[in-house]
Structure formats: C-alpha cells, structure tokens
Image (cartoon, rainbow, N blue to C red; front, top):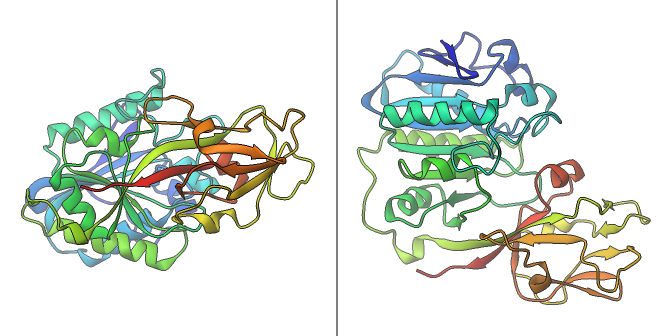
Length: 341
C-alpha cells in the first residue's frame, strides 16, 4: 500500500535478507514501512537508512530477519527504510533532498512532501501504540558506540543503558526521528561507529533483539555506575561563506589533520582545531555554535590566537569528521558536557 510518499507492507520483499544498501532500490524504490507480527502485539519501531550512507541499520535488520525467518517474532516490529535513493548513491542525502533526520514532527522546516511523509509514519505508529523506538545510525569520524536520548526519563535511560554505558542527552537539532517519537514512547538513536564495520551491525542487531524480548521497560532509574551521561550543549557548523579544507592551505579555514581523533576526548582551553586565513582573522570566527535555544555561543567556546582557531573553555566534541561533504550537509561537530543525575 502506498500513501503519503511511502509504502507499507506486511511482509519483507524477497531478496531483502542479502541485498546491499546500494541495491535496495531494486526491491523498494521509495521509503517503506514494513509491519511484522509478533507474540506481543505492541510494536517496536526501528528506522534505518535515514541517511543513505549509514548502513549498519540495514545489516542489523537483515540479521534479525534471518534469525526469525519462519518463526514467530517475540514482539511485533515495524521497520522503516528511509532514504533508499541516497543509499543507491552511497550518500547521506541527495543534493535536492532534505535531511531525512530533520523532517519529523517538531521540525523547523516548512511543510513539504518529506515532512508530510514523516508525519504520516509517526501517525501510523501512534495509532499502533508503539512500544519503543530505535533509530540506527553511523558516523563518519572516529567515535565509540553510544546511544542518544531526547528525554531524561527513567525508561529511556534504562533502554539506553542496555546498548552501552555512554549516553548522550540532546534536544537539538529539531525534527529528528528520536525527538519526535520521544513524545510517544522511550526513543533512542543508536550511533554504531563507521559504516561497513561488522560490529556496528552486530551490536545494533543484538540490542534490537533484546528489545523484542522485553515484556516491559522498567520504570526505576538505572544505577549511577551504569551510565556515562553527557549533555550536548552546542552544534558547531562552518559558516556558509567560509571555505574550508583539510588539505588546501589557501582555504579560509584549514582544519587540523586527524581532527576526528579528538572525539569523546575532554579537551583543554588552547586546543588548536585549525588555522584561519580570512582577511579579518584576528576577530572573525569561521564557525557558528548554536545552543539548544538557537543562540550563537561560538564566542564562548572558540577564539582566534595568532591565526589559530582554538578552544577557550574545556569541552568534549563528538562527531568530528574528515568528510568535507558531511560537514557542509550537517555540521563540523557537537560540543558536550558531562551530566550528573
């Protein structure tokens, strides 16, 4: 059944268990929501390939379906395959597309075909009484596996602790799948390292399978020692008018090589992130850092010291990447602070 720009199926297409992400469009040519019946009727929602180059989610779903082929699932599951057209090209998104993880209810984007699609998927899962939501992602830099939550309620944190100790609390950017579904059920984003690594798909599969076996999600808080909890305080982007590079020494901003090695490292003031060649380099900050209220707080975190872009206060970055296209399409990094409960 096709409606609101996505298809709905009650079975998985033949060939799905072995198809590569860049071949998936041959089986499903548009975003597709597959509902599979299990012993417990309240469904787990799993979204994969919201970014077409982040393939661990597809691998995890394939492993799950192989395990239960010909068997009754312990719990019903609804699987959403997102940007299959970008997956065909091995890209996060196509140039004429919005980011499929910025189009969900609560987005700041104006209404369009993709936001209507995301709203319809959300409405369908609300109608079905979704049990929990899991959105599987990869990142392009060197990052450990971690879970992201949009709310600090006990059920969300208990679910996150099942994936691992490292948990990030973030309420921005707006329009994410996890942010939208957090109003319906415990909702997580799983960050599973770089795409193509076998352990990323395996870790996500094991977690999803464990969720299917949960009769309920406990209301009591996880033990303090079970979590390393951090709060995202800002998203950092390179200004649109600023040219940047990792190799072109004439660029307005020359970023340091191996910058992604700084991810999840508590950095000191004075840490150098790049070198500024802008004509007004003594005072001009080439980056914008938006906090959760949308305010530019770049001057609190960054400064220029002898044409070097440096940190002004202690912070921990995540998702620093060497992929210049991803930096333009998304961001340079996120800044985090440790959170105590």
